[in-house]
Image (cartoon, rainbow, N blue to C red; front, side, top):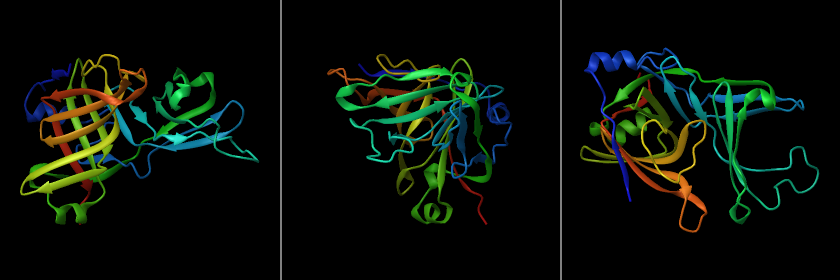
Length: 252
């Protein structure tokens, strides 16, 4: 059965603007700079690492939650075959205090893990810089604007028990005569916003692909187990009553 929740924003535009100060206290005319954002660390074994950021979920006054892209696992500093055998992919969800590793390995069904950062790392930090940005009306977008203002990102403001700000790059956008559609992800969808049964959660969030073609509604396909007990992006949910903003680099 499709799971659906209407999450209505409270207050008018003035209260919403105040809420958009975000957990980073940035203004509404700034956006997360996905070209520079990264998670970096030093393991207790002395290995330094960095991973770029592809999505974020924030609440005012709380740690942001950040998603890194999936990569195929390799033998670190190996001298022979570098890809792991059998192969599997993994990716990171992290806050300043905790992290989760999502593993997908076909028939091997590798286990996910979640722990405090200090259990494995001597240093763990998240660099989430802001960039000056400008808003684009999603219902007035056209190819000329897309070409001139690329790259684009999306910011979703939605009310659960708390007000959440979700951000991710726009991977794919279509437009025609005032109509638009965005397909992107994976993004982080906080469990606080919608209940999606039989779906994996990481640091309190679902991992999901997102679909947008209205200024106040998002459809998601979240990562969970199907009828064959394998996990895939197949768990549907719809969140309504949200505010969608399309942001670009600041126009000249």
